[in-house]
Image (cartoon, rainbow, N blue to C red):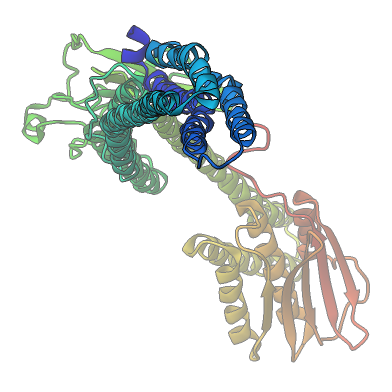
Length: 627
């Protein structure tokens, strides 16, 4: 019973089995009754023939007396034998095989007894007897016919009873089957169709992302368990969907926050790389925006001291006092309250003691294997992995900016040293040599005066002194012009243009300039040497060439820079510098300083050509392999 109560499949099978059993039972009962009624019609027919046979015997006895007695006897005997055979026929026995009906058997036995014991002797007497015997035989036959009628009526009643019983059983089976069908339909509708509809509604609502619908099944059958499982699944899906929505919303906010952080880092990087050496003013606003965005802080940036290896705090957000290293009293980037800057003293305040219960995250500020310092970040809630990646990116940008700034400062110092070296070499190669020559001429003049040489001989030395002074003064002006050109505007091209314009005015015709060199290709040292070589070549054109056309060409091909200074003047006798003129020698020396190849030759069209080829070796802020 528990199985039927808890299993819809078991109930459906039970309904089918009971209905099938009832149908089979109905069919079997019909077949059984039909089989048991198989001889009833024949028995009724035979019983009816008995009655007809009895009437024929009575009619034969009523024949005319004129008939032959033998014929009457023969006819009566023949009819009597027929009646006897029919009375003893097995058909009547088959029609009387219903053991439940003993009255038919008794009636048939009585008919046989009456026929054999009463009617047969009576008929024999009537055939051989007188009229009274005939009348008595006819009366006996009439009674026998009445008994046969009664027997036929019993047979008919028995057959009708079987038919009524079969009809009643069919009605009963139909009623039971109908009730079972109604019960099955009600059960299927209540426990199958309605739950299936609710499950379809649940699936449709779930397909529309509505996980709040529930079937609320209480039955313990399969659909009840399935409904409760679907309810639990919908509840879990609702929780999962809500959790996913929350996570997606959180991710969207986190992505928006990270996008904002990347924008802040991008803008801060532009300020870092373009803010000079003001690291505090360019980095502090970016750090404060990131703190407000990620709810972290404070942030402290410390740099390593290259000399003693100690860490020096150079930047701290949420600070109420200026750092010990502060170099700009007009900067308030580090201070929470700018008014506190008014109370700042040039004397170092006592060290501050920081007390914080917040945890800290220490990120190295490093470029490659070189650690420049550390970025310490305080937090109350541990930052996520993506936030840590952004903070690592921030540390990398700070490291790159600090490293570049340090290299720029070093490069500026090296450039300053190189510039001083260039000035010293220029003074040594030009003005110092002229002054040395003048000093020797002065000493020569003094000896001639001591020895009282004639004035004509001294006049030659005086002329040499005058010419040397003029040459030294000219060289000094050229040096001043060169240094102005190199310091006025950045790059070689503006200085070359100024030089070409200057010599165009001095020569009286336009000097052509061709410049096809990538930007930022040459170092300051290379630019100065190239500019001086061009100026010396143009100066030689001005002083010696008597030219009407000149051209300066700078081109870059196959990783080499090509310089050509050409004119249409008188040309050179040879490649040697004439006495008292050091121009060609100085040009060769400058070419050697930049590892260049310098050639002088006469042009086939006439005039002189100065040709220089070298591979530029530009100094880089970040050398290969350092990152």
